[in-house]
Amino acid sequence: MAKVLIIEDEKDIRANLRRFLALEGHEVFEAENGRQGVDTALACVPDLIVCDLMMPEMDGFSVLREIRAHPPTARAVFCFLTASAEKDTRHKGLACGADEYITKPFELADLRELLRRRLPPG
View 1 (cartoon, one colour):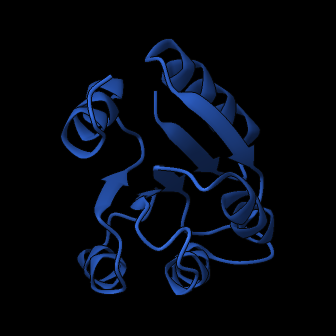
View 2: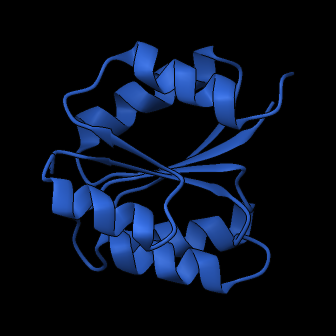
């Protein structure tokens, strides 16, 4: 079972992701904004972080920089999950150190594939 942190300001999206990830057998943590997300990541040290890009308090790029700056969380798989489909934004996200980038709306199959590829089995 992997630890997965969802950092998403949209309550319904966060709830749907939580249910899906729990059904997939993962331990799920949540944060409703970027600042809370960084604090939660440092407390729980997740294996995977699924993070929105545009949020209150801290945007996803700032979250990623802080996550990568702390040794306990630096190795977490980081995935942006965002409505921004612009190539420049995607490129910037990956260039800043994100491992994955999924555009909303997304299929749960896309997230399942990410879990299969990026997290250890079991």
